[in-house]
Length: 360
Image (cartoon, rainbow, N blue to C red; front, side):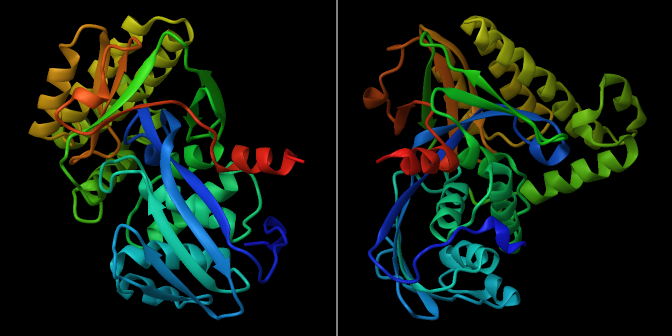
């Protein structure tokens, strides 16, 4: 990676504290690694890292989520050793270090307001904030590419969506991402819309789920008809395998739903936008088979509430959260039987960095 993307930073000094936002995907799941479309937004829940630089050649890494654990990460790690580092939760830190190449070590302490394993992208939030603390310079696409590679180095074949929105989002807007071109467009969240995230309580770990299987199935389909995000309905007839056809149909239809949802949201048509969310959940459950009975039941229950316009599982699936589009006040997160949060669209790490630099 060219040195020009790094900004100068002190080799020692006081602690730096940064927060990387999590994300909720309003619509467009399993499209990012298929050159398709998605519409996520960064949220106020996030991962905070306190970095105290020293002249050490290692990082001592601790986390509030794992009290008593401590990881030792060298500043020049052996890439082949990443997947054997213990405790395992620190492997992503080691992967980012291996790519960002900070000049000095120190201590890293991690705290989070994101529920673990809930599909709100705690890993991308951690990756982007580490990249920022280690001095990685460049736009959101540069940071996102580094963070995606870090995930790949720990064995999780994620796409660009999560790190790109955690790096490149703007407050008040969802981010329409075209993964075929790398282009992004801001889509305003109207004041008439409330976004509520509800935790199913069903934890998942992408390394232990069928996520990699879905990636492989999409790759197999793409080897026949080309990138699924660029395919159309007519291309699906070229897939003789019914399983691959279902996977591809979800991606093709989901990309169309992203633009229909964005158009409805921009027009303040919450009923139309909600209908696209409902369709998306059915497709994720039936065509892509990444929902669960718990997620389906939660979606059904939330959808039946007055003022709720649409609900769907969000993220890779196999557990995690449901995202709800509703009228303000339609859902009180404090009275639900499971943890929930009303969230607003916040700045990604790049916009937050820009704001910090503009302060006197």
